[in-house]
Image (cartoon, rainbow, N blue to C red; front, side):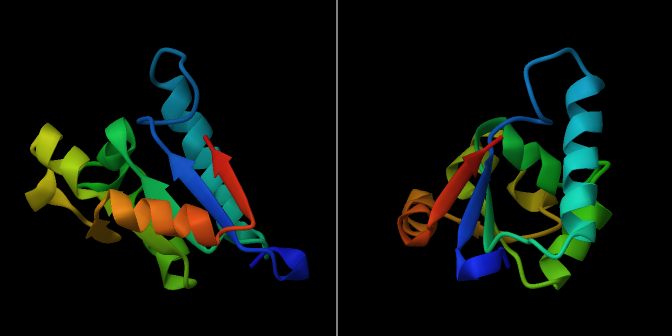
Length: 116
């Protein structure tokens, strides 16, 4: 958790980090999450929606990293509507499939929301 008992939610809405051509966004998100995992300042929740859900399914190069973060107590919430849209529901490897109400509730409870 972040110091001073502040709750934090991270929003991941892309298949990587930033709007550059691949493979740069994937490298950036992998580096970001690696440093986050290695730190003592984990968020309470990471929400994945739109193309961000693609990071949580079979074939994603960061599945093991996400599993490690989840094992440390971080809740990973995946947008079910987004998974359905991309036809990925059956390929989920990490996190829990939720709805927009779960994402809204996580944001409402957070002291800080970070959008990547």
